Image 1 (cartoon, rainbow, N blue to C red):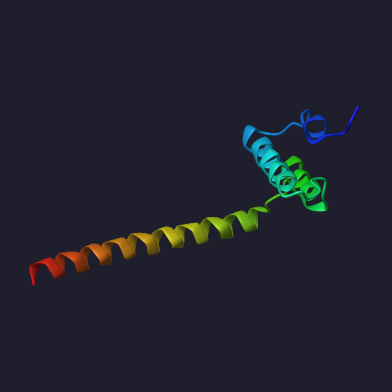
Image 2 (image 1 turned 180 degrees about the vertical axis):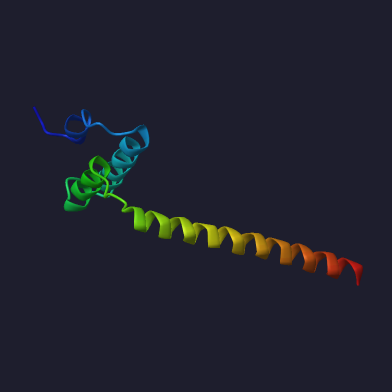
Length: 90
């Protein structure tokens, strides 16, 4: 039996999205005549099976960063709306 991608990756506990990402990677490599069984693919699968843990400290920093980005986006949206309003009254 040939060890093709369908045989190797079909029994892994992956989500539908992860399985699709792997199949897309393999298909792209095969379509371009490149080897599909690469270190990059193995690293991708390893990440999917055992994602790195997020330390609470990092999680709080990420949450704070996301809150700041949301605030900036809201402020940008308000300033653009104000500029449009001012521009229409001139």
